[in-house]
Length: 230
Image 1 (cartoon, one colour):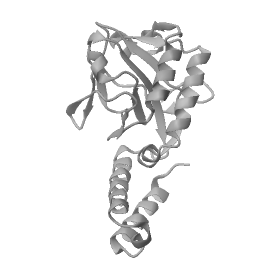
Image 2 (cartoon, one colour; image 1 turned 90 degrees about the vertical axis):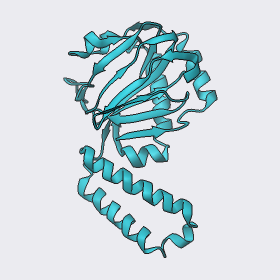
Image 3 (cartoon, rainbow, N blue to C red; image 1 turned 120 degrees about the horizontal axis):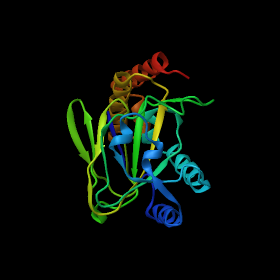
């Protein structure tokens, strides 16, 4: 499942984040990689211990938790803090899978169901650097507008192509969903898309007179009751 979240951050918010990151301390991204990913990762990350990282992460998370599409399609239970990454010319992240459990060995481990990449740099500001997600065996290159995000299943292999010009700047996090299963989340996402389309086609006061809308809405709610792990 790939979810495109347009305009998560406004241009003003991005400018403020970029100005703050320009004053931050970036370190070798391999410090936060584990297992085979350590050999594939070639980038820079804002120091994970920095107060700036915690501050920016809290602000972005607050914005996400007010995003209707994110809430309905991802059904977030918990999010990790964001990592803020830079890819300068020659940097890349080879094909890998993210960890199944984040913060393993701590008091707050998180099962990683979904991975998110939030783009901070405009696509015309750098060449290369596409995120390539292998979903359903079909590789999909992704390079979105600044402020847009993409969410994909953590079970998917993915990579970042080498940057050849400019600097690719992104923020990434991982999500534990209220619904564990990928197939179940896909069904819920598809039914939500249909309900949302019906909302756009008919005035709200007429929807309750639409038998198809009522039946599908009831089915989705009952599926949520079956699958949600609160």
